[in-house]
Amino acid sequence: MLMITVITPTYNRAHLLKNLYISLQMQTVFDFEWIVIDDGSFDNTSEQIELWIASEKKFKIKLIKKENGGKHRAINQGVKLAEGEFVFIVDSDDVITPDAIEIISKWIEDIKDNPKIVAVSGLRGNKNNEQIGDFPKGKDFVDVKNSERCINHLLGDKAEVYKKEILLEYPFPEFEGELFITEDVVWNLISLKGYVVRWYNKVIYKGNYLKNGLTDRSLELRKNNFNGYTYSVKQNFVALPFPYNFVALSVYKDLAKEKGFGLKKLKKEFNMSNKDVFLLIIISFLRKVRSRCGSN
Image (cartoon, rainbow, N blue to C red; front, side):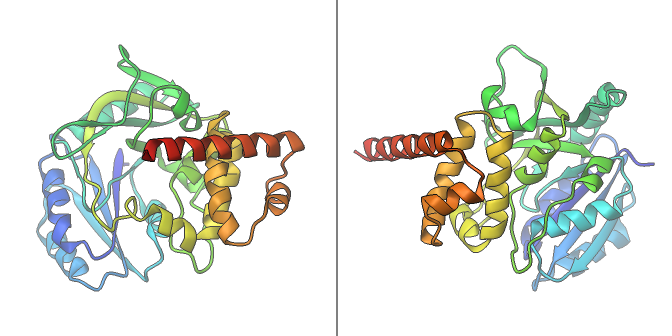
């Protein structure tokens, strides 16, 4: 069995995929496969991938063509067809470092006999080779639940590689008519089951936040995929430590108000106590004060 499956969901990114493909060709080892899920593109994505499939000799490439359904559905489908023991999700506009697969393979060897560790992760960097996010000072690695990253100096996007069997057990939820749900929905659910990730202080992934990409459109995506957003916040309210769970709920409250969710309905929806409601009001007030002070 292969060690690693690289999964790349893509939508109209044929002009960018070549950079990722080149970074895969430049790997120091080739114990991996690459699954590209064309999520209903209307550019020449599939034609480009088919040319690479025909010519590539170092590693296997698979192409899945499907109707547009969002990144999370594409990942679910890719995981089902993965031959690797671990899954590395790499976006179509990003690249990995030349030694990424070799390093990940070594990390996997270090944790494979520990049933509580279900993933390894490196760091992400930007196009200027600057580290994205933070990492605990003086540490080579730490074992931490995804839901506890905020209190362990692990903020910012990382480069997680999860066991395929755990992603099969906990797939991304799919809501009819919605095309987006945050990846933390699955990562935090896995945390709630008691599993941890081993986070390493090493950049293995480089990316950019493109205009009109998923990150750039986060508020719009929350509004247009409200059921999935509600599901995510409910889970975070349980999984995240205080006060981060209430901050997430406070952000949700502002958007829910536009959808006709008053505080009474919110209390019932999230099974909140009177104390919870009081804390939510206080934290929402503090957020507004901070926002106003920051704009002056």
